Length: 159
Image (cartoon, rainbow, N blue to C red; front, side, top):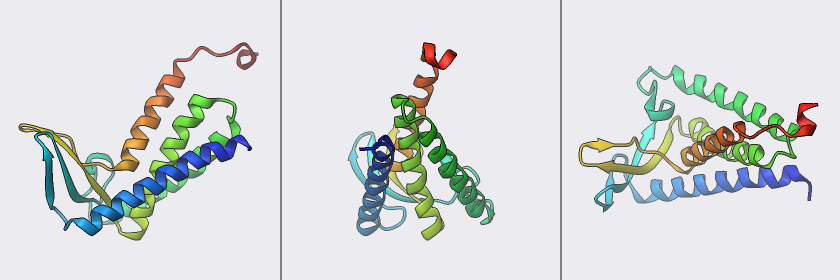
């Protein structure tokens, strides 16, 4: 099986898990509803019209198209980078996770006008903004890309 199918397969799994979990949340919760799981975790249904941590969420609507455009450019660029670096496993795994997350959130942004977030961690007065499976994949993917950036270049890459 060609390597690109492996990486794009991982992206597809991320998209499928992301969209399925968001669908379940939309079916089970009304907007803003919370279900306390334990003292530090709730399932919620929030709509994020901005970017990470609701950046520009209240910007008046133009941000939907701005973030949609950025996401489309990112999807094209990441796809290109995967195809050009099929031999670099850690790099491609990180990119595949970021790609899947970007597509999952892009789908929401295009079809709904916002991104559905539902995982909410908190401790006393401290809280992390709600997020979703796509956001998690993006964070893990970026972590793997950072880890990959610290690898020493191989002899063949130096020449």
